[in-house]
Amino acid sequence: MKWRNCQGTVFGKDGSKYVGEFRDDQMYGQGVHTFSNGDKYTGTFENGKQHGQGTYTLIDGSQVEGIFQLGELIQSQ
Picture (cartoon, rainbow, N blue to C red):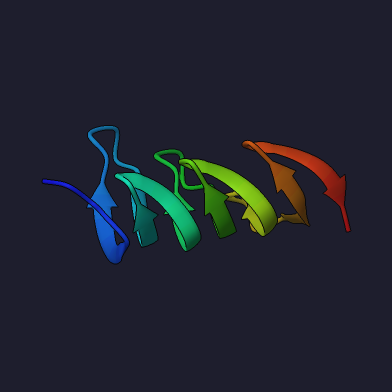
């Protein structure tokens, strides 16, 4: 199945889940990625990675808001 310029939900084999926008088979645009350990990233994605404004929420409820670039937090707010 191809994910092109659409919105949807994908469940990973590891128990992770992504709900959001896709472009060319990758997470792209606005979305929520829930990791298998319960952590969650809500924000923008580019080429399958956290990229742009977002909030990373740990399973204990603590949060880090900031700017992400290619999956890495580069500036917290």
